[in-house]
Length: 160
Image 1 (cartoon, one colour):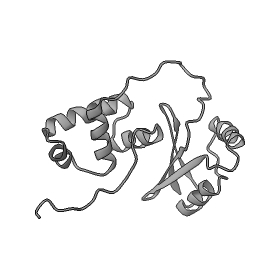
Image 2 (image 1 turned 180 degrees about the vertical axis):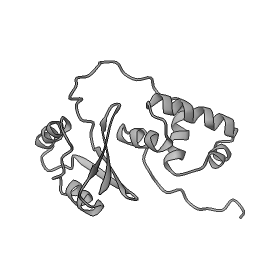
Image 3 (image 1 turned 90 degrees about the vertical axis):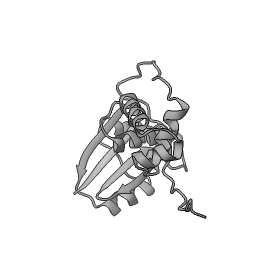
Image 4 (image 1 turned 90 degrees about the horizontal axis):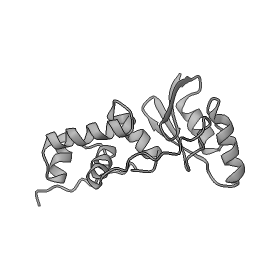
């Protein structure tokens, strides 16, 4: 069993167990043959028709789980509310990117030259913005919406 987190865009998050292995799921996503459960299967099929020859989904393995997101946001099958969520501040975007890079609260505070308390406040605002209770879900949803990307930080020592 593999836990699958599918983030179709917006505020939606589908979590389910798949009988496929992580490698099988990753292969199906890379071959553009994987489909999410209804109602998003129709949205992915429609996106594939419009994006002939282009990849429509991307997947990242996270231990025994797979996070799958569309390359471009999928239409909300329930219909769009037409209201845009509040924008993130520049500082929230910086904290979000550092979170995605795996920094601890202390490391983020040092990197940005602010207190750990301020980092906790920014993280709380990010959790509220993305309507989730964990940092991992914040990062997943932010990646799905194009706010940040996972990239490795250089391991340059400050003692030179």
